[in-house]
Length: 77
Image (cartoon, rainbow, N blue to C red; front, side, top):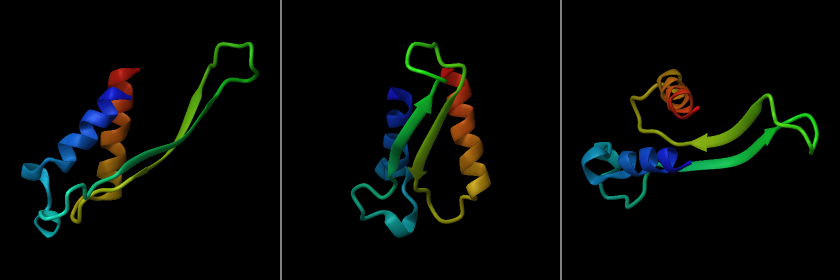
């Protein structure tokens, strides 16, 4: 989670902001809404599913953003 928050902070840095959002204090939001995993309470989960909302700037494709998120997950896994 700290790396995800750091990535979000980097996107919101004034030097990284899209020109249309340069005057917004926090234009890009990341919300990890749900984490689910495991088959039952006493087991070590074999999988994990997350649902999140991730804002991104105009000109960035959803596919590119998904690839960045997946790369982040693979780096921390």
